[in-house]
Length: 178
Image (cartoon, rainbow, N blue to C red; front, side, top):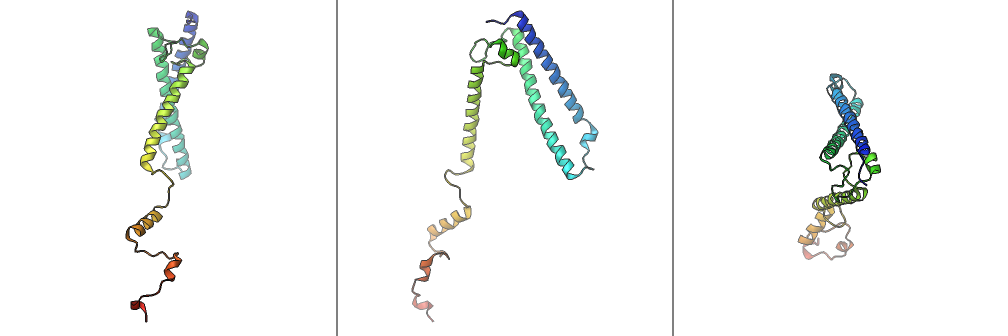
């Protein structure tokens, strides 16, 4: 079922409204960033500074998400202009109007989106697995001091352990007798 002109106009208006709201949020965030009172934390207590730091990190994360969503909205508006809006970028199938109404900037069907996310998760997991193998050896982790002591004992066989009861059962040699 191809989108009707009415549906397409409704979705385009939704996208334009989203873009306007995202740009307004971005402008408001920039105004807060440029406020000189927000930047001066020299008189604040350490806890206030920590709170301000957490708030700033949250603002950065929200700003990043807004930028990403704005990019997706602009891409959707471009797809409307070139006539490819409502067609899945992966499968070429039509995206149902209900999905487009819920997420107007979507570019995949539900099935294709799920497949795409699984693939992204597998790629991220594989990258994490490769990194973790470099950071720690396989098997049970143990205290490096114990590993070093055991390695030295095996290599040199010269260190007597205090907890070894057999060392007390040895007869002293002639040189150590008094």
